[in-house]
Length: 199
Image (cartoon, rainbow, N blue to C red; front, top):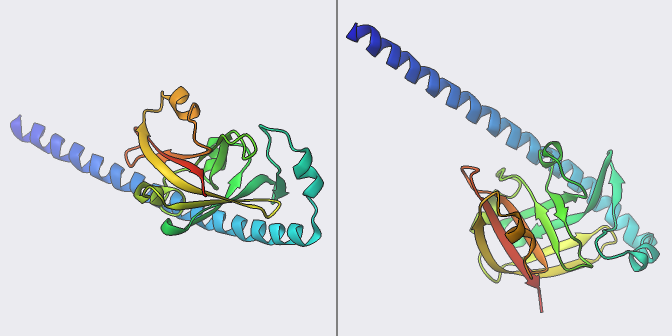
């Protein structure tokens, strides 16, 4: 009886190891695909922004833009609001205007707020080619947001904090002009980067 129980426990343990390996492999593949897709979208958006700058297409639209909204452009069936850059971390990614779980698998998204409202919040997965590097940022690191008009908005990291997924009020009630967040490694908490305009 003891031998049967021991064999059953060994089989259970092996099954759990195999399941973990499968899930890890699947996550790594998903992360790799997300990185490739984001880079393709980034290239297309960069080209679009350069074209817009040359033609001054959005000058009037920017002037008429209301607080709480952001100027956007549509590419490959997606609405984008700009590019987020954290040079010290090697992060340069397109930002989608809306968010849902499928869109987050493609690229970081605007969670809420706007540049004009000085309350922009961006979110993204902690894929290694998305926002995973943000966990190493330091106060004073430069952050840039390039809008679809080609205007660069410069920020510096003011502080970082870890919040629970239920702390939505704390996430949104910050006095900082730009907030970026992603999941921690285990996915149980949110790693939050708060930024202020650069001098």
